[in-house]
Length: 389
View 1: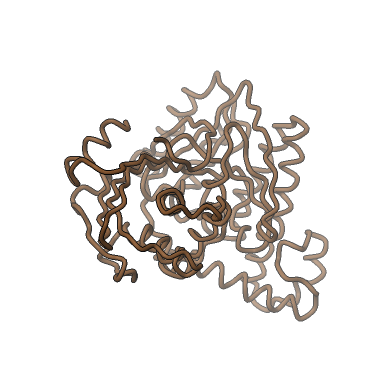
View 2: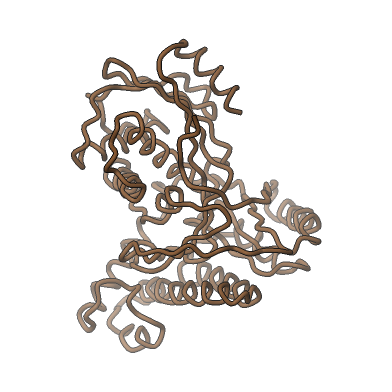
């Protein structure tokens, strides 16, 4: 793979100079959805699929970007004087946003770069292809420009800052954090209110993680993601009139029942209920995993999907079809949507001996009901973003 990308880089940009190779994974969240901007816990892991990058510093201030996933766009040129969001700049707004974020935090990028990317994360799948590009860009900037005091947590935060402030997507910290801080065969139990985290080993001796991509394309900035965040912020503000809290993640279910009457709109009350209950589910799920209680972990995954369907309303017929078909299959320990919703992916834990039948049966049900196919990936948990060579 790296040799093929290097050949393409030299074809586009010529040989010579200090050409470096990088990798940034995608991520899947096992449980804890729409909690990261509500001060709750999440439980993501980095994957072995992701985004490869070939980069070389320039002597001028020109930026040249090329993606082998969007070859029709050709080389997209920009400059360090032109770090503004432009819709026609397409995917290059993500690396530009990170360069801008570094600058906003006092790290001046004085020279441009040539950059080639290739991602084997399905675009629009909900496995965080955009965050993968952002963290990749941060790793490149740290490495090429010698920003030694920039930590991997900083890179995650600057990626989020660029997506929030430059690209106008009010995402939480989970995606960038999981991609920057990933550890092989471990998920990250992250308290998004404090960024305290611990690595939890994922021991699936007789089971696999199976991702099902719905192939319903969606752009988060065009979705109701920002609307959901706004609804939670309104609910929090109303609860704060009667409770001394800074985030919905501070409440458990009993406490929420006592204060939910402060939320005037029943829809916003449902959104807040999901944020509170999903956070508690995530805490219990990690406790179950530590006790090797995979059955309880799977039940909590299922409950998570139901809450995302009924209280948060971010699933839709595609994701519901995939999950409900999964629940019917032998050997399925748990299944839920993962990511922001509105399309994207599901994540299932499936016993080894039934994985092939699971893919065939769920794929057939989905094709018949939705009218087009889903793609399936049996994934492994990998390391975080890094330089390769």
